[in-house]
Length: 208
Image (cartoon, rainbow, N blue to C red; front, side, top):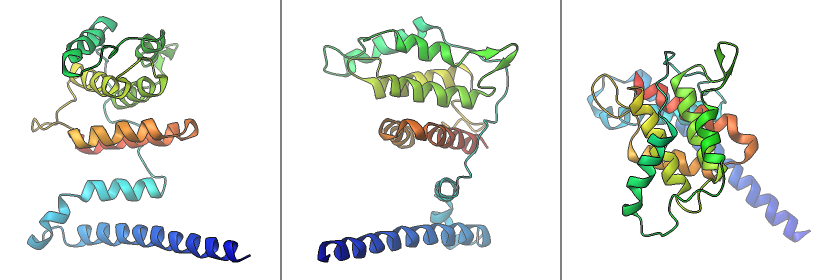
């Protein structure tokens, strides 16, 4: 009974901490909207999109669709393999990039599939998010799955001219890419839609 009471107390404390964080995100987001022109909040404006993403994730309000719907320029399997080959010298592993099965090719081909003339993934952002997710989750390589997935993701964006925004700035930073990659790797299968929406939301909002 004593152990149960202690656990109940800890659980209540943890729930309160989570609620405090949620409230903080909402307050900061509102402050950004109300005082966007205030010079003293320039540092806060810098993190506005991140705070909005946290709030949207919390409220299950992430973007379901990408912004860019146009003819896709698909890199070929050889293009992806060339990138993987070029990465080998950067990592001290004799098994980096060695495929275990055919699941890498399956992931690459999956994003181009559809029914009749309708793509399963109509926008470039949806295709890119699916590619990143599948390569990570398929564990196609003996070593380097996450690094390879991130590199292939960037190649797809570059091939379709959406790796940079209109000002020439990459739409995803190194830290954001690493975080998303690790986020996908640690996610559960039933969370697939949520994590893909997060990737799509990051790409959408940084394209604006």
